[in-house]
Length: 211
Image (cartoon, rainbow, N blue to C red; front, side, top):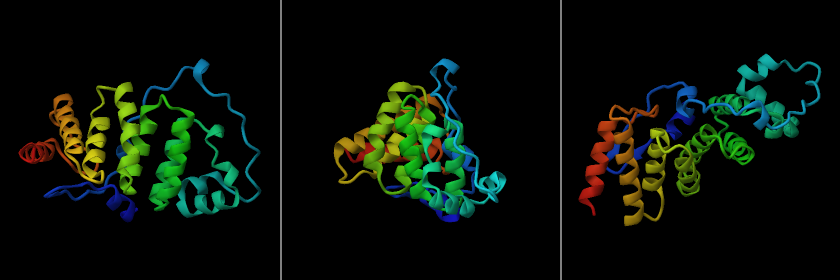
């Protein structure tokens, strides 16, 4: 858990912000509105769990969940889930420091439900934590079009642009624009990773001075 939270910390140029302990529910952000029954993907329940496997143990013990998935990889199939279950499993996996497995689950879920901004946010945040900001940028740009008033999407886009390599004036402009939008949408913004609106203002000033 400690390592997973450290991976989620954001370090901007000349600005390091320590990530306080936070609930992963908060880190992944609030859920979007669930689709109507007519829009839901038909659910074909999997076979019952093998004898001796207790669902409550899998839900509370990340290591038990990872062992179960390793022995039964077909169970980690988003087609057998709904978005809420995906996000719950992701949180369990992150608590167990299984970030790569969480990223794969979010990747598959985003393909299954591309309209879900909460899945896009979660996937992008994990991609950034894994040092893959370039992969997160198109995901966030698409989410921005679906939810232009979501400050979390703008914040994550700024993080991704700022962390992208090689650093270019275009990427700096992307980050500056995204952080400015965050402050415009929510002047009191505080991200679960500990970055506050006033920190973003400092980053904007540095980026503007470097133009």
